[in-house]
Image (cartoon, rainbow, N blue to C red; front, side, top):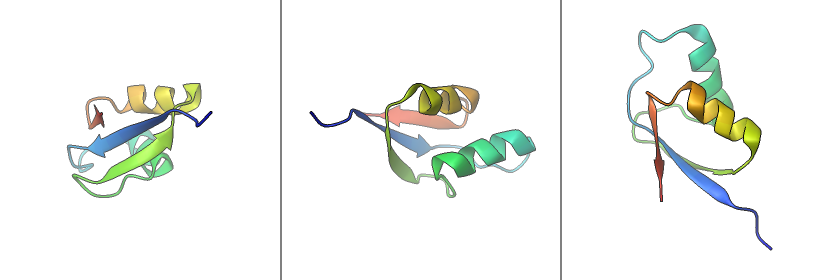
Amino acid sequence: MAAKTLKVKLVKGIAGTRGDQRATLAGLGLRRVNQVVELVDTPSVRGMVDKVGHLVRLED
């Protein structure tokens, strides 16, 4: 069975954010606004998305 994935889109810029939030976005592979990455749905990825939830959006 294939692993479940999440599509995460960066909807706000990173200017003015804390360093740990920038590092989290880099860990998710997000660099530019409107960039979408597809990630495996794991608890660690979910935690990272929650940490920067105000900057990203989950897509279907």
